[in-house]
Length: 79
View 1 (cartoon, rainbow, N blue to C red):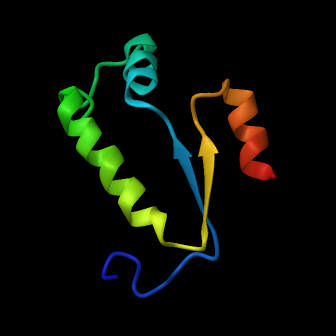
View 2: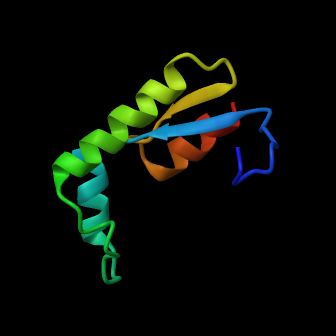
């Protein structure tokens, strides 16, 4: 609440990507990974589980399959 000053979005688009896909995409980047991006798979599993838990009971969240090709993700997020 403090970070958003009490503001709440009308809609949250949750781009859900499985960990293997996310790690693979990170490996393709031409940039040096950040400290967080270097974290182990177990860390990312906890992050993913946490977002799943947070968004499971909310009615203002639209989940999009982030494992799709980038253009398909973009299109899904617009529907």
